[in-house]
Every structure is written in C-alpha cells, then in structure tokens.
Image (spheres, one colour):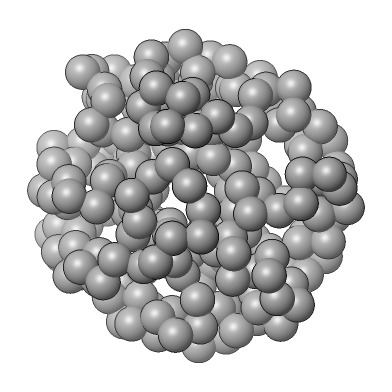
Length: 213
C-alpha cells in the first residue's frame, strides 16, 4: 500500500517542518487538496504555497483539484511538476481532452469521483487514466468519517480495470486509518490518502501501520 499524507491536516504554521517530517517518516507521495470555494465550500492551497512545499519535499506531489474551471487550475499548477493531477469528473464537460492535456504536460493523469458517483462513469476514459481517486468522504474538509460503501465501489472499479487491462492505480481519500486499511487493501486499493490519522499520531508509526498490512 502506498501512503500519501494529506497536507490539509498539517500544521500550516510550520508547513516546512511538516513536509520534511512526513517525507522522512516514509510517505510515498504528498497529497495536496486544492479547493476554490466554489466546487467545495472551502479555500486551501494556491500555487505560491504549493511551490514552497515542492521546494522542500523529497517525495512527489499528488495534487487533487476540487475546483471549477479545471483547465485553468491544471495550467496554474503544472509548472510545479507534480507527479499526479486529479480533477473531479462531476465538474468537467470534456474529461478526455483534459486528461490528454495533463499527459501532454508530462504529468500523470487522474480523475476523482465523489462518494455518489459510480465507478462506471470513468469506464470510457480508462485508456487515458493513470489513477482514479475515490472519495470516501464528501469533499471539502478534513477529519470526516469514512463512508463504507467506497469498498464495494473500489471492487467494481478494480473489475473494470482488470477487464480493460489497465494499470491505473486506485486511490482512496477520506477517513482512512488502521481500522479500515485491511478492507481497503482487500478491495483492490493501491494508494491511500491519510490526513488526520497521520498528523494526529506519530507520523512514522501511523504511516507504517497503513503500509505494512
């Protein structure tokens, strides 16, 4: 299991130390939630702050856009050279074109699905996807409880990927902890985003408890 701690749950007053500490603690990626106050009722990181994170990070960035006007935000963050950029299919009229655009920028392409969005909604896009992010909470705020139905959703998505012969990763974000990590692994999940569980505990021990299952 790959682990991507979410900076949304970090201490913003000591952001540089937080980034360094989670990298040293064994994080595989750094998950950054970009919210615009329109698609979700919250505002988070802009490109200037993410640039500061990128300068001290020794692990790749995983940028999750929760915004309107996806193409604008992709182009805004692309110069920072994240490993992944994901956008919400619920907010994109031309997902195929945007996925191609992300890949043309040298970045791995990903799509995020809200809890109520079926995995079959990305079936026609699998050839253009490097990762699918399943939200296991309603997007907008950290610290929410895990929605168990995402487990069945992950299983359905895994079947679609196998049928298509796709190597795209399945990522789950929201309420992940040591109590549900085993079920997530069994459901075929490859990457978990963990915010509160990592940052409210010993970073290294928390990350290891999610990786070593």
